[in-house]
Length: 493
Image (cartoon, rainbow, N blue to C red):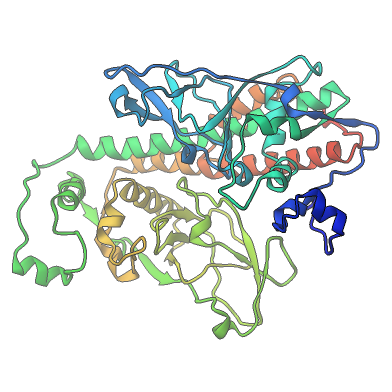
């Protein structure tokens, strides 16, 4: 942590001031930098208005509901789920609207903070969320997106971490806002740039989810509308069990057979991954007893391996985070066109295609990678998209075995049947995942920053949206560091 100080020794007066409490959390101090003149601090409670509004749920009405876990701690995106009023976990959910900032009272220290981009008029949330609905006029030029950008910064999270009582389940409520300070640039154009960056990032995250939904819908519609016969469940026979050679999964149950029948009965036919030209290889074990030397790093180091592990793959086929590993052992490398899959646990089946040639990159024993000898990237992307559909249908879970999230070994991959869609449909699906697109042909300015990126987003694939989103996130972090340090920010316009 950059701004939190943990004392190495305590004076008797310090202990007495804390009521003779020896809980370590009582002596942690958040110490922000001394500002140099281009910025100042403002208390959060003076900057925001809290929406304290509940709705009485009507049983037959449609709502879009978000729980604490629906706030993505990595991106700040919020997923609202379609629900009838009688399905809501509470009869008095909190009201939310487009542009609101939702702050999880129990995941604040994990960046459980999101910006509502959904424009539905029936948005509701759990009551375990602080809903910030607008900025006050306490400081001219400060908007809610600017505040949101800093709420997702380490500067805010470390303040929260240092103040929460960790002797019990950490929780943040409205009373804590007065103890939180937000750095504010004295230049209104800088504040506007921070807000624009935050909105552009949120917009790209929304486009990633939208294109993923479009991809799933294209696959589902094609399968549903091209069935050769109606599914009828039949109990397994001894001959079927002997042929499949498995009695360790739910592949003989109604749910599995009903869902896999969409592929088996597809008019265009199907192929197994091996017949389609893929070979599946397990990732290396990175246990210290095998490596003998192992150094882990959150940042790139010369000579280290870049580590793509399944736990960090998002459900949209991107990497949430990347770590690095230093070892003297020679490890197998991933290459462009490889498909990396999660093999075990609750994130098994998450997958990513490596579009660009990665530099000195490997995975771990929980990762499986599929590779083609012909380097046909389009086939790799299509297989990954189909595999993602399998996971969304719960088919990967049904084919896996074992407890603690289950296990999907390489020998099961030929159970993943690849439908033979037309080339035009495959290309349409692939472009949703990978499409460089064309940037708008007019100059980007502070005033049109969000609109310029929104127009570009329409032509980008998920891979490119994620790349550009991460670039904007890094730019935002750099600008925020300048504001926190009180330095003058130079705008790129």
